[in-house]
Length: 126
Image (cartoon, rainbow, N blue to C red; front, side, top):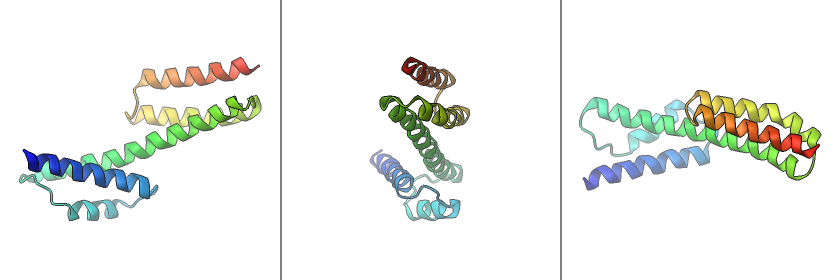
């Protein structure tokens, strides 16, 4: 049981390290780094599952970070009372939110709520 936890935390650490260190990362690079970890599962399908989950986590972290940065950009314009800048940055935030919802990083209702609140905040500036 302890070995499974060790494996889990190694893969978790590696995926977070890759997500923070490299914004655009090559799949071969991910696979090479994952092979360097001592993967505990014996069954081939389980080994593949560990690799897939680490890769998916990397992509999900990247998508989530892009969404948060886009929303933060709009919120900084709102905080600065810049309605024109917020309106120009809003489509980028919508696109990032929709992509995150499409890939399953966030749920559809969460995406709708985020977009609605951004839009309401911009309209309240006027």
